[in-house]
Image 1: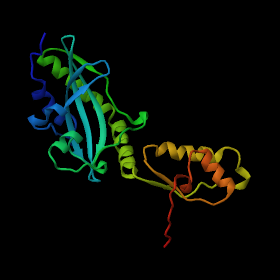
Image 2: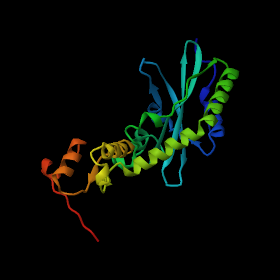
Image 3: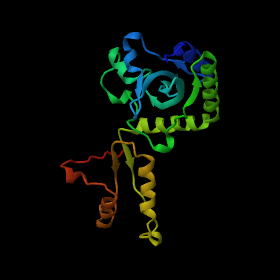
Length: 233
């Protein structure tokens, strides 16, 4: 059986109504090939992207994915991310409005705890069925709004710091040293900023301190034929 309704005409206006502050960024027809998803089992379908400009100048994104399998319509919210591009990267490149500079792009990955994706909402292949699925989608969105906003905030922080992050030092009082406290503190910092590409550390030049940070995976600049510079005002 083929779809008997035009989902695009319903999903885009309903999405702009349900996702307050968001607007459709569905690209022109010549770039429509950029708006298809592929699942791990080979199923494919179109997605309908929405975006909202944040106070920091970036764009909050989400999309509604529409599948049509087993003679039923499937809808879900997916790909909640932050980018300094209003459109998907492929579309932005096609329009020649940005250079190949990942500073404008999105994070390559985020912690699983901040990935937001709704379950599939399934409906019959009718206009009424689609409307019902869209309202279920909207209800799910409202229920998970706090989770979605937290994901945006975390991604914004990581995106702005992805090119580098400085660790001044980790200090533990002498009487509490060698109890694993410093290691736990460092692990917490590295977990929080796991998406930052380069982490730079400035610390004491003692054998004990060097061994501590090397055990955590840090390498000295001289080990990779580099030289670090510091300017203190």
